[in-house]
Amino acid sequence: MLYFSKIRITLITLVSLFFILIAISNFLDTKNFTINKKINLGLDLQGGSYLLLEIDNEPIQIQKLQNRTTLIRNYLKSQNINFIDLRIENKSILFSINENDIDKVKNFFIDKESEINPYYNQYKSHQFDLTILANEFKLEFSKYGIVEIKNSSQDQAIEIVRRRVDEVGTNEPNILKRGNDRILVELPGLDDPMRIKSLLGKTANLTFRFVTQNKEDSFGVEKLYFEGSENEALVSKRIILSGENLLDAQPQMNNQTNETVVSFTLDRVGAKRFGKATRSGIGKQLAIVLDGKIVSAPVIRDTIASGNGQISGNFTFQSATDLALLLRSGALPAPLNIIEERTVGPDLGQDSINSGIIALIIGFVLVIIFMLIKYKIFGLIANITLLVNLFLLLGILTLFEATLTLPGIAGIILTVGMAVDANVLIFERIKEENKNEKNNLIAFDTGYIKSRTAIIDANITTLIAAIILFFMGSGPIKGFSVTLAVGIFTTLFSVYFIARLLTGLYVVKNKEKVNLI
Image 1 (cartoon, rainbow, N blue to C red):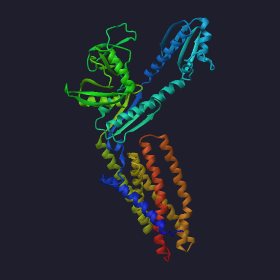
Image 2 (cartoon, rainbow, N blue to C red; image 1 turned 90 degrees about the vertical axis):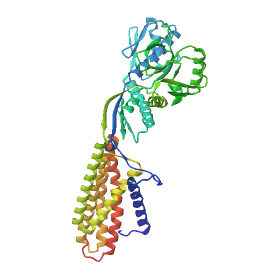
Image 3 (cartoon, one colour; image 1 turned 180 degrees about the vertical axis):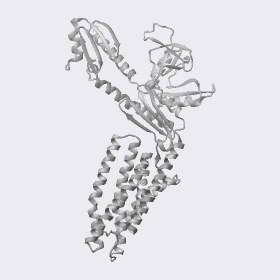
Image 4 (cartoon, rainbow, N blue to C red; image 1 turned 30 degrees about the vertical axis):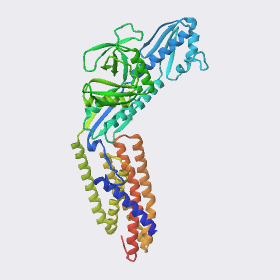
């Protein structure tokens, strides 16, 4: 019925006022308010940087193959099986054995019930495919294994990228998966894209290794260059300590040398290893290697057992801050390559906002004029409802601190049309009922009831489309689907609660009039 109880009227009023106040907070200084929330502007509205990163998974595959090679060698030696030319070639592990041992080694890889060695479970994996040709074995990644590696490295990389971006202090970054080896990074309002590119482009793989002159080192040696220099040094491949043992890293000023350094703190295991290495390596150079470049190579003067140390290397305060950030956030599982980048200036974003607002105002004004001409007083009620509907929509988006994009503004404009469409259906249905019903109250109530099915069906189909867009789309498409979906709910609320309440109050007061619409 068109009658509303006082409790219902109070609830509708309170809900409407609540969301209207939240919506208005976007235009006010809300620092002292209890609810300090605002709608965030997307990349296309406030400007910023767009980066598409691709993960280079080849180093991970090579590392896993090297680990498997070590395990295979250990197994073959433990079983006194002679092998020839155990090597990695074209992302495959190859080796040959004596024909008499083929079945024994074959069982090691194939037999599901095999318990002949402690390394079995580390080999028996759907990650690898095994090919045996005569007495030569070939172990390579399966298709599933490659996909598993890509998914795992992508998940790790997203987490590390998120930590680095959050440390920089970028507002509302958008970090999303693309396929199984790409990451999309949108950074609204970013004013220094080169810095973030530098941070995301570094793997930040930190190791501590001794500088050596002995080319016959049992662990092997490699020639590395110093960061920003053509100087080089022979460094042992033996890793004394890695970045995984770091608890914290911070930029500081060294009071003695008056230079900027990065001080670090190690965990318990790292402190123990570092203390042991510095105790036995007094007089040696300890190379601090970051992504294959020597940052510094100080000479060990004394045992460092506290788990605290410093990295020096002619840093500016900014570069020391960035290095500390990289070390705190952790190393990426694989290198990231920037394959696409775009920068949206704030002026272009402001133009988009202005264009969207102008389009919304023009559409809103035309709708208001049409409804007033067509439905008179009920057109006025529909227009009031439409205005409240917009505030409800903005209020909900503000409450959830949603990110508004240009397609999101298009969703708001579409909501205006949908809200009016619902009122048009109702009023036209009421006109039909008025022809057969002399009682205005019954005609209006019947009009609302009989138009409900058509309105709900139309909005449900639109909601289904919005849900599909949200889960299948990305970035701006999601922004459009969110505003569209929220607009559907606010439209139904405003039409069947606010508009019906105002209509009911007017009709009850003027029920004796012959023709109200």
